[in-house]
Length: 77
Image (cartoon, rainbow, N blue to C red):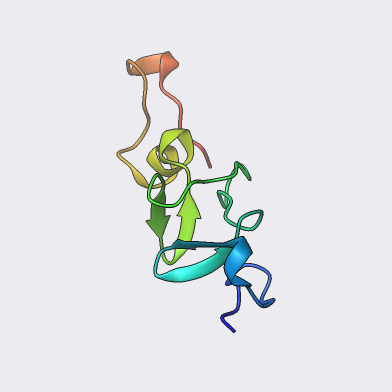
């Protein structure tokens, strides 16, 4: 039985979601930053961990800041 990379418990066929080459529980496949539930194939990955595409992955690992520049630019720390 494969183990979920998030909780390290067994993942049964009826409850598995396959993403990043691993089998996850549906409730364990969440963004590392904001905890939003993710859908396989519609999220980003960094160092083996899932992130939602917007805004978390872009803000954490994309070009510095986003927005129109100046005072309106944002960057998560």
